[in-house]
Image (cartoon, rainbow, N blue to C red):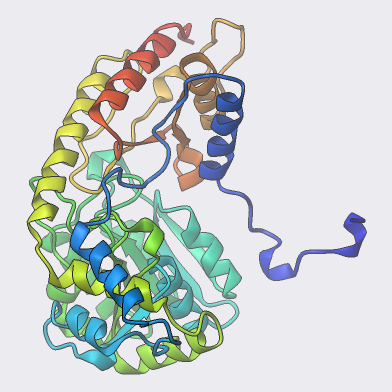
Length: 400
């Protein structure tokens, strides 16, 4: 096709392919060449969907539960989700096609051109693009590993303005594994008290994956602000149901109604079979969550042990999710055995892929240069092999 026949709409002009996709495609190309690549790049649990959830989906198919679903979600699933949040009922819940679509629904329903959304960085790559697609302006607040990647009050306050419509936070966080405590939520609440026009969106998709620090939802930490809080959650991460595409939005009636109006013109609702599986997951046996959390904790510790023995790599201990976010800044400007100077996160990650056949993701893709992300949502065997290869590659870099 003649490229001149198509031009991108202005709303997507700035939307780029993410570093996660770029590195994944590079890894796929190396595999096609016969290299044994181990991916530590994708944030997807290696566990299976719980058996009782899969069986519920099969039962729904056999019962011919295959009609158009209610736009806001099946009543029984909305009720089950609402029961987890004090004071919330069915009208406070929307079921969406993944938690990413929950975010999109909310921003489409609420943002006007020029409205600002404050986001602590590092942040999940999709946040800024979704905001821009909806006509908003992302405003970033830098955080540091020394502070546990929790934003400082003065930096967060400086980012706020009369144009701020949302503050978007993610705890436990991707890519850092940051977990916030009651004091941290209190700091955020104090700022929101001074900006009554600003809403809080709390992405809590990693709720069940914390190690040592207990999880505290914005809904429970800031009860006086519930009329301005949207919780985004779902079954993808904790229940290893990424492919089912079921997310939840929990918030005030008026916002949920607006999101439902958007969803009516988008997906028209979430797959009925997937909702049956999600209902079984959230109402069925929950002991598997603790088993899987313990498995992830052991993998985290294994990764930290390997990284701690790599000269030039430093890494804070994450308290949640299934990522570590090490710094390679001490190696910036170093030279590879092939004579290439490592000047950027992409340079470093491409070198690790070429030298070690291991995929990691550049920190610049999460708005944090000098870092890279490792997902430990894979087997201990693969983690050991990948990190041993990486250690050899890192040791071969000539320090600047």
